[in-house]
Structures are given as C-alpha cells and as structure tokens.
Image (tube, rainbow, N blue to C red; front, side, top):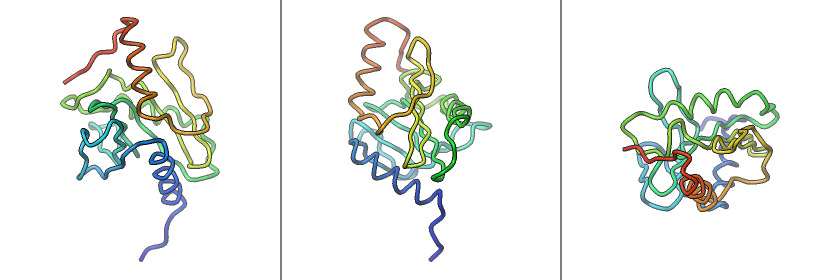
Length: 154
C-alpha cells in the first residue's frame, strides 16, 4: 500500500469537514447529484483547459461551487486564481445555478478560505468551516429573489 501524501491527508480531513457540514461525498464515477441536498464530488474533470476540481459542489441538483485542496502549510492567499478557473470550467451540458459557479473554496483541511461571487465586492475570506448546503441554498435564493440573474442552466 502506497504511503498517504500530504495532499491526501488534507483531502481526508476535508472529507471529514464536509461530512460534518452535511455534505454527501462521492467519487466522480459514482456520483448521484440527487442523493442529498448537498453533494461534493471528488476529482471532477472540467472542460478542456480548466483542469480537474478537487471537489465540485452541487446544491439541490445543480452545480454551485468548487473546492481546491492544498496540503497543510501551503498559503491559500493567491490560490484563488486556480479555484476561479475551476468555477469557469463546468461542462456546458451539466446543470448549474449560474456560470461561472458562484462559490469557491480553497482549503488545506486546517485553513479554509471562501469567495462568494454573489457578493457586491467578492473577495476571499477565511472561514472556520465549510458552509452547510442549506446555507449556500439560502445565498442562492436571496440572490434569485433580488433578481440579480441567478439562473439555472440545463
């Protein structure tokens, strides 16, 4: 059995944190986006040129965000460009709340940062935990009620 890498340890910790926040986690090949309100899909391949998201987040059956995992000790400031690229890379045939995806996290499992592109002035902020799926659904519902253009894509 191969030794666990530092990034592998970070992903294990992130899995645990996501589960505690109410997310159901799947590998990409076994994913069921309707199995729960919040689904986190590991190692999700994006459209060409956008790489692979460490996690793609689905809320109520539509893609809503991404998580970029880094090993503990890696500074997360400056990693936002990577998660931003992932947020823009969802294949066109997949359902999404809006494009690019509105939520992006960067996490080591010890430190986590979050950007909500629905904010009037989006910027990365340190958070103590991943949001619960219903919290992200609330952000989306509030934005939809304000008529700011959050629309579901097929």
